[in-house]
Length: 233
Image (tube, rainbow, N blue to C red; front, side, top):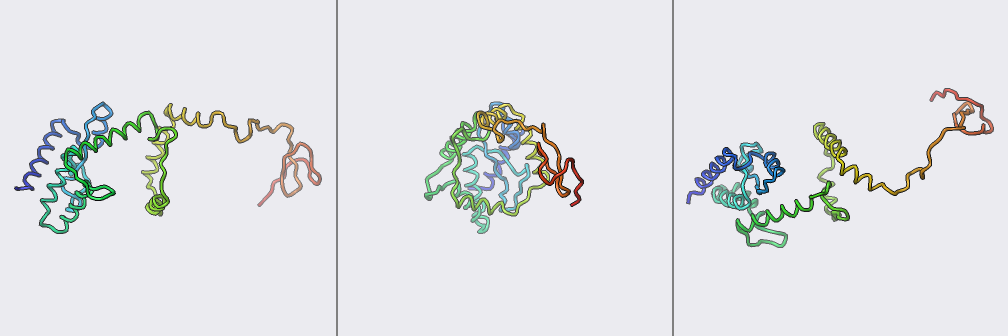
């Protein structure tokens, strides 16, 4: 069997489907489809694997179903079978689609696609009606090892100006949403304020000084004179 020819034929078929408008061109367009009610599931596949010189450009991505992505991974393993370096890397990538924490498990294209679609449904349900992804009372509990590992990954990293600006814009937009305001308001509702409900007042307070410092009191303390003085530090 000519695996390379089969792979190229299928890639060309997917590109024709994209041109016809039957599949999204990129992840951004796919998100728009989902917002408009199209619940079809896609995974974006590297036409030329990164280990073989592929890049992250839009031209090197095609949208595949879960089953198609699984089969594409298998075909790439067969294509690079004679290249020891690429073959090992492709096997590692393909193996990740077939194993779990307990070791090797049986998997085929249809089962893989079914599981990925079910996983997407669960995530979508958890995100529904909730700004931060988890409903009230739910939380993610991370182990000490996970926290330390994440900390090492982020240590020393600095955000670029573009990243800072993006986070700032997203935060401003989020704070303007009605549900965010309600959530923040409900979190503080009924709690005692820092000043215990008392309003700050400056009535009947006067300035006094002792030549070294200025203070405000109702009555002039001993050793102080009315008024303020300029203090050079």
